[in-house]
Length: 148
Image (tube, rainbow, N blue to C red):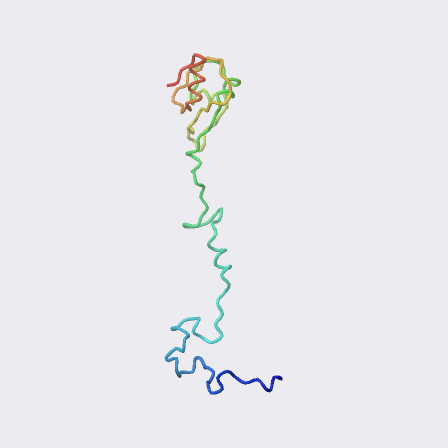
């Protein structure tokens, strides 16, 4: 068989012509008005729009970059073993930690502090107005300290 011997499956069926009226009606399958219904329509690549939607460091509106936890709410964490090395026995509070230079104010505010139980405690500490974990409380009270 050669190409000039090939016949169509339905020799009497006409090929559909779009956009010229006929069987398909008003818009001939091209939808209603707009950019896509015009001849020679070309939609710009989607990647151009995606780039604009990505958050920026210095963005605007709802697309600007934000951290999950604002800086002013981040706690400073200390382990009891570290405080054992850095502080003498006695009261431990925000003021003492600031005075010794173990932490500093963030944006003019004193950040919250949490004490964790990693390390050993031999000194008698009195923790005031600090969040202390259960493990740290056990170690502090064993050493003769207090937690308020």
